[in-house]
Figure: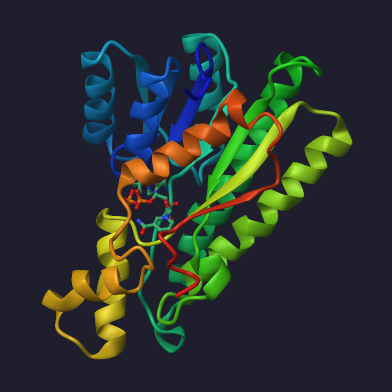
Length: 266
Ligand SMILES: NC(=O)c1ccc[n+]([C@@H]2O[C@H](COP(=O)([O-])OP(=O)(O)OC[C@H]3O[C@@H](n4cnc5c(N)ncnc54)[C@H](O)[C@@H]3O)[C@@H](O)[C@H]2O)c1
């Protein structure tokens, strides 16, 4: 059983997909969760689902690319839920575009959300956790949603792959930096394959488009790209994220946890 009991976690992009599943699993395992997103109705629903199963959660509208929203999120966790021990940097956007067609504004938007979002969250988490988490004992935990696209690259989604490549090295750098500073925080990354979410559907569309195939072959072609022969579920990823956030991973930092059904190897 993953030990997150009594911890307070902020989960970004918790309105749907991997973020919602992670928020639900953290709450099921005893964490108090601040579920944040830019989709108001969807985070309300995430919180309602958690409460219906006896968990403790609050929602907050929070754009990860906005610095003042981060200050409000930390305040809501610390003053509303009584702490801030775990940050799941999950919010992200995808862009299917050829390099030749990508505009400066599109590139900038993806980098602001996927890269700046993680950087800001980590900065605010470090600032809060260093004051509250003792140097010895249970550590604070930051888990970043990266992607196998950061390993393989991604034709017709190069901006997305580039943004995740940045998160990959940011994660390693942050893990090393907090250690040098003597902060008791672990920083890790999770690398999903193609997961059955709205973003996963966009990735599948890219695959059929690039192959010149029709859209009704998308799922089958995407499944074939995994050694395990299926897409990942949000729960496949949530279990890995919650492990890294938990005390069961107390000796794990700077790691790259690939949960991809063998996608990047194939
Ligand atoms: N689905 C996949 O195949 C896959 C693969 C590898 C990595 N990932 C990564 O996992 C994470 C979650 O992916 P998902 O498949 O659940 O995606 P999704 O599109 O289903 O959900 C993403 C969530 O992030 C939120 N979001 C977007 N911009 C935001 C912003 N500026 N501020 C706050 N929230 C914002 C969205 O509203 C949405 O609720 C992402 O970082 C993604 O890059 C997903």
